[in-house]
Image (cartoon, rainbow, N blue to C red):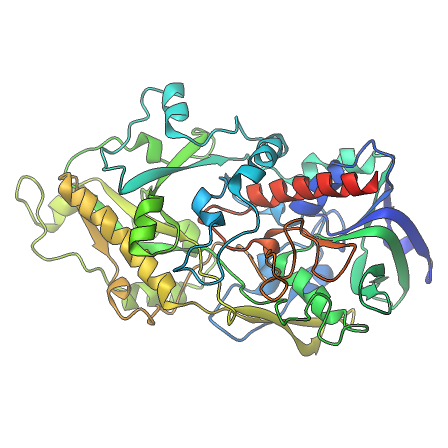
Length: 515
């Protein structure tokens, strides 16, 4: 069922069993899991079915740390959420991502990869993916042309991605949600307050407000905030009527350890001979899988670095892969290239001994694009400021911060790739100068993956996280969070597949409690 919430009278009250706030990948996946059951599910979406400027502007915020994308552009505020512009990259997190790594501060999930595996498999049909298989032999069997570099796989190994179409949740799941008899979708229903009981031990209701000031209330047994990372943080901090510091924030953890994926060019690979890179090629609509290179878990432990992958991409004629910088102003891109000159030694030679510019240009050349997790850092955080939006909710104040471990990890991966290429006589890896400078130095442009991760992280100890292993907010009996905000660490994989898997796992947990 569907109702435009603007048609409801002021002071109206809705009652349900489960109230889900946000209809993006997490919220829709969770709602789908309840279709056909006896529970009444109320799904609140702040936007409509298409982009509207007034609603999108509610996401505008203040950036006070490292430069970042405009916050109102990073997330989409309508049914389907940010799946409306995602790229379709899907891969599960690695085993090491869930471990407590002594060299990675605040690492260690309270669950393991094995616990998520069945939910990853269930997520695949929702995302229009192939079989739940991310091992290289599986994809080699599908096509004998898929050759790999002859690397020492005790040092480097392949990390596999599958590609969704990409699936637009707003289009694919519009009819199943709207036609469901027990899931009631309300669009244009912006939640401005989460209302706790007097003891701030449980949630009684959420308040929805329209631009004209009219409000209505939703009551339920269970509440799930499934907005984006920043918007979940914003709602928790702004809901401070019964908890002065905000809900779930008794230990000042809400908003801390915001993480991104660092995605930017760190160098080029100049090969000395033609080398089949078919398995490493990226061609939407043709390949169904793509391999990138990563340090093995053992090497990550030895070097004490973060998890990351390097993609070998055929670059455009002008250098950097366009997708990384296409939304940046031309002067910013030019400044990045000017400030991060190449460090290829002048005596670089091919197997034939030629070293002129034409010879180097003729060699097979690939751009090396990093995709790396960011170390959890309490100083990298989301708070709220004094400025309020058109609905009276304080806007986000965003302070993105990086650490020397982030920089050292990038350099270590590139160095090991370069050593392997040199050992095999494949060619040379050309680094950007900024990778060789002090680990506190970053170029003016640090490109992220548009991935908001952390801020409401999962941890068994409420002094170190916001939600427990079941995604329930510590100290609140019936409030749960969904989305990438609950990730304890980010891993090197794009987050959408894990977001959906965690939402399905939460659905199982809520259904079991509802019996």
